Length: 159
Image (cartoon, rainbow, N blue to C red; front, side, top):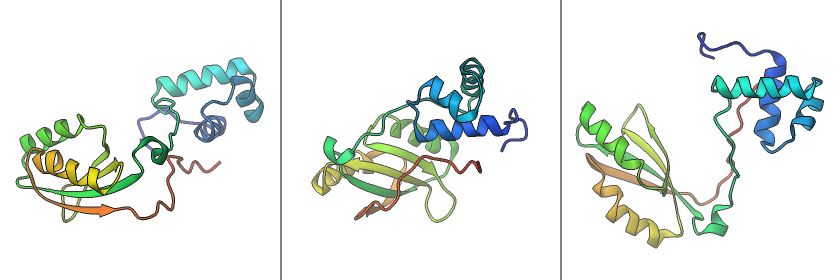
C-alpha cells in the first residue's frame, strides 16, 4: 500500500472484501457481515469512496451475449519513445470502446492492449482502420484468446 494513503483497519478491509464480491449488497447486510451498525458502515463506505479505495460500481456484462465475444490482446511497439508520441498514443486509445484496457509495459514492446470484438473479421477490420493508424505505431503482435480461464477484478485483501 501507499505509505501516504490513509490506513485501513480490519473492518475497512472486510467492507471492501464484501463489496468487491457483491457491490449491490445492502447497507444493512454489509453492516451485519462486519458487525457494525448501518450508520457506522455507511460512514465508512463514504470515507472509503472519498479516499479513493472504492472507485465505483458497475455491472459485469457477458461479452458473448452482446456481440463482443472475441478477446484479443495486442502488443504495440511505437516507432519512437518520446513524451509527445506517448501522449498522442494514450489520447488516441481513449476514443475506442473496443480497446478495453491499455497498459504501458517494460520489455520488448511499449503497450499491451486488451480488446473485444464480435469475431476475427471484426478484429481484422478494426486492426486495419484503427490499430495500425494509431499515432506512432510501428508494429503490432496479436494474440486471439481461445479460452478465458480466469477473469476477475477482485484484489486479495488478506481477510
